[in-house]
Amino acid sequence: MQVLRPSLLFCLISLASPVVAETIYVSNEQDNTISVIDGKSLTMTATIAVGRRPRGIALSHDGTKLYVAVGDDDRIDVVDLKTRRVESAIPSGSDPEFFAVHPDGQRLFVANEDNNQASVVDLPKLAIVQEIEVGVEPEGVGVSPDGQLAAVTSETTSMVHVIDARSLELIDNILVDTRPRMVLFSPDGKQIWVSSELRGTVSVFDAQTRAPLAKIGFEVPGVSRDLVQAVGLQLTPDGSRAYVALGPSNRVAEVDARTFKVLRTYLVGQRVWHVALSPAGQRLYTANGNSNDVSVIDLEDRSVIKSVGVGRSPWGVVVAP
Image (cartoon, rainbow, N blue to C red; front, top):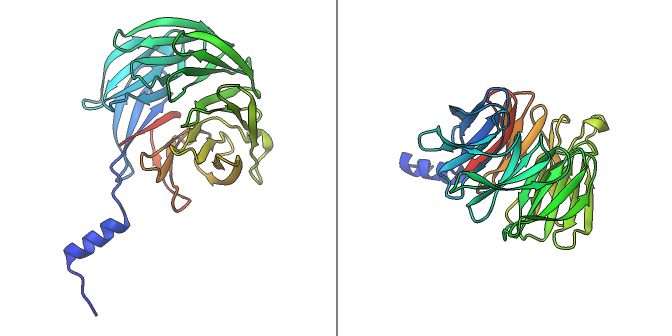
């Protein structure tokens, strides 16, 4: 019988179980904090104080800052991830809920829920440079990979508003299912994906013609249809899979993004709001608003491997390498 040296045994274990060095950031709507989770140990390691009612969050392109929409303070807080403190604040317009960072890294497109506008923020200037009238209760925001288009959902109007990101003019309005939440562009920029909370659907449109391409419905055995509410969305970088948070059904759906077929669902925490993929695509993290935790899904094993407690009412989630 061959006996493995300790050093060799360690190497073999390391190869079988690669170390995950990523860091997960979660906005806690009721606690006015950001929870920091270590991807290796899957434990919460820090709490960052921010403004009131943090929801939408995103990383700067260089990964050194975290932008946080703090709705009750009408601003975007900028967190220095080295010091883990708010280093500055940016005016955002009234009640920012969600936003997207433009591919140039110089601008934010912000949904202002209270005043039915989308604000365009110049990051170097820390100032609003344009306000665009959209529908009632705007929430979701997406920007195309080439930076030419932006899209904003309006919950009450049940529309997606398409904006020319260069001229900053509204160029189209798309009618969608009731109470649209999230909007994003496919990685190749050819499609627009929109989740509709009350209908529990995801609609897919051609990004240039705005023609409908597909509508995806969801069913969870044993769960009432009205509890299957599509909210957060995430597409893999290669465009092959979509992950959809299904709200109070406590499920995340995995969808084949080319055939638009639902492949499976994962049971996660209560009232899942938003989801985020790890950079390597091995894991999916979910912010569960009613159980105050984050579920960790191993996408290779297709199983939920852990629940990590965070603050009260976790809403947004992002992952940094």
